[in-house]
Length: 116
Image 1 (tube, rainbow, N blue to C red):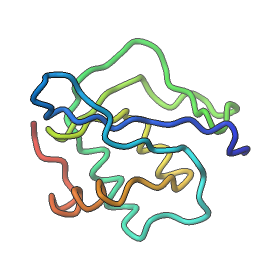
Image 2: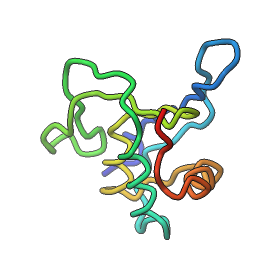
Image 3: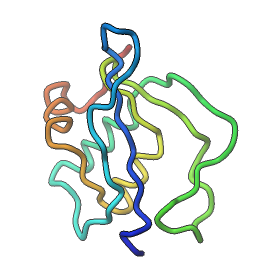
């Protein structure tokens, strides 16, 4: 895998008083040799978000195009942040690191996205 093929996934703030989501973090899809110490809990959180939208089509692994499709495009939320469903795949398979500020948010919510 070539890190030059990395893309960024935006995690948007859905609690913006102006009504439009704004980007809080950019998560570069750069493979890491080992996961975050709380990686399993982070995955639990990412997978426990409420579905906001589902789009037609499929998501492919941009870091390994030989892999079959991942899933359908889905947007998840915890009521404050929103993220693409495939983010969990990149954390699980490639140990992609998330911003520590967001990990702290997850920890404060006991690793389960609040129902929105």
